[in-house]
Length: 420
Image 1 (cartoon, rainbow, N blue to C red):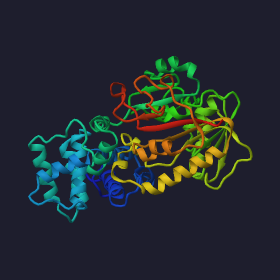
Image 2: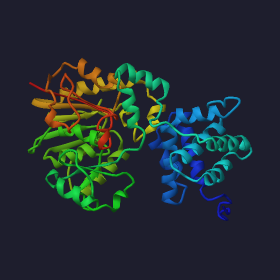
Image 3: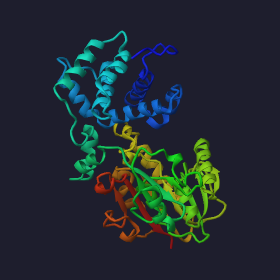
Image 4: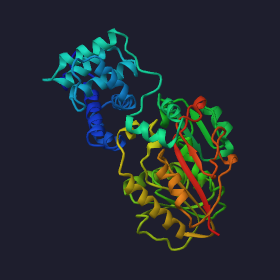
């Protein structure tokens, strides 16, 4: 490969350097990948190079324990966890074993990341592993702390959850008009797992798909679409969408006929929500505010609280959550406080739905069991996709091991109550 005269670097090296910085930000600093990626990738000119950098780091994070096991099997002395050579090898192996990139291209773009460092070591380890036919298992090995926690929480489900993480998920769309489900499934070449939903293979250029510019649908994981469905048709009634940005649930509620107040504390995320509303030609009252200090002028007929959480249920699309976990005590306290406030804002006869995209019972089942301010309103099987059943308590619990033959689903929890 000839050096690029503009950068004096081999083409492709800037993308790998960005991937290395992203990996370090997640593993060393505990930063969320989707927050640090935009500024770190912005200097890379080509969109496909930015996408490649993200794909490399996501696959490295998805398979990290297995990549480390391969690296350790090929070194006489175990490399420190934070060694730069280990990180570079993680990225190189992810490219070769998961993305199928040619070994010579991986070497040419990987070794420059170790300029002045142990390039010969990295080259030798990588070449030795490929020469002996090294391969990854069928399903990723979960980080030991995660595996122990989930096995205790979900006995017998850990293997299925891990298998659900083996590949990035397909593309799920929520439709503005559920009556058009068959039409959009045919038009887009997808399948529907529930009215108002279409699933497409991953890798689609979303903005170029039919119906995007016209606002006929938006991207939203099937599991993430379930909590808003539990409120039913709005018929002009008032609903509060707490922690509303980036707006998937707000759009669902508006499309279902609710008069929506969308509350979120992030001005930047509310800008994205407003843009999504404009594209889909849906309306909502958008309010910037903190749910712990804000108060409505009048009670609502329904409240949907998609509470801040660890987001471990999104690990198949955000594998970085497997390697960083926020302080659970802080999160669970916040969730309980928001639940109590949401209940106070409900009119008599109103409905409250609480949801988290978490696989941690303390953020889901534990919160629902402790909440006694309202009367339970059990979720029924008819409200959920085939293959997802309500729990014995009438709650929703999904995990990435479910619907495996149909492309999987994120991990979510939801519970519902009525105010008497």
